[in-house]
Length: 116
Image 1 (cartoon, rainbow, N blue to C red):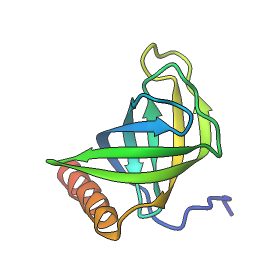
Image 2 (cartoon, rainbow, N blue to C red; image 1 turned 90 degrees about the vertical axis):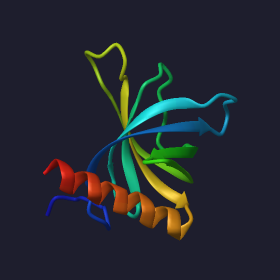
Image 3 (spheres, rainbow, N blue to C red; image 1 turned 30 degrees about the vertical axis):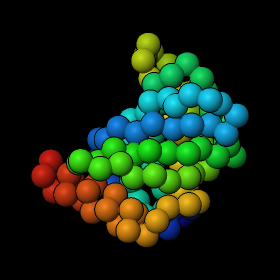
C-alpha cells in the first residue's frame, strides 16, 4: 500500500493562480501542477514559504474565467535550485462552489486530452 490519502485522481494541468494567506495583505502568484475534485498541487513563485495547516484564499485562472476557492495547505516541500520557484504545496479545497469545482476539473481534463 502506498499511503496515498487522496480520494480523487489528480489530473496534470498547467494554469496560473493567486493566493492570499490569512495573515497577509497582498496576493501572491503560483502555478498549478495538477487538480482533482478535492484539491490541487501548486508551485509557489514567491520567497515566502508556507506551512501545513495554513488556509489560503485562491483565485484560479482558467480559460476566460476566474474561480474562487478557499483551501488548506496539507503539505509543503522546499525546492532547491530555482531562483523563481521555491516551494511545492498540496492544497485541499475547504470551500468551493460545486459549479466552479466542476469547471476546474473539466478544464484540467480538456487540457490533459489536448496534450496527450
